[in-house]
Image 1: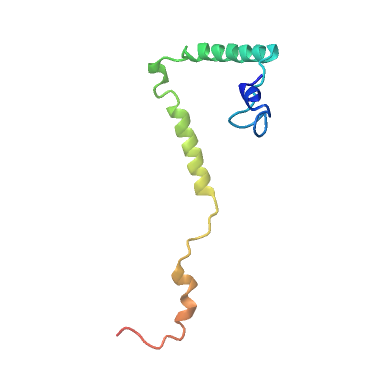
Image 2: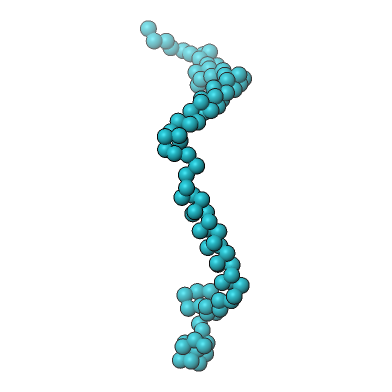
Length: 105
């Protein structure tokens, strides 16, 4: 029982399950079992992550050739793509120069 319930004799102000002065949920054995299971999984993950697959020397530059091949394939795709030619503002507005009344002499 809450001390506020005893002192106020009216109950907890507001909703009992949310807010700063909420009623805490009881911890059940299912909650404890689920928490232990999650902690076991996390401990196993930490175990496997603490042992590297390759040494630092093996890891350095091991994928350089694959990355270069990917980059070359990407460049080939970009050069083969059919992009429209560049358009400039002068081309869009060139029709306005038809009735030009003055010129720079």
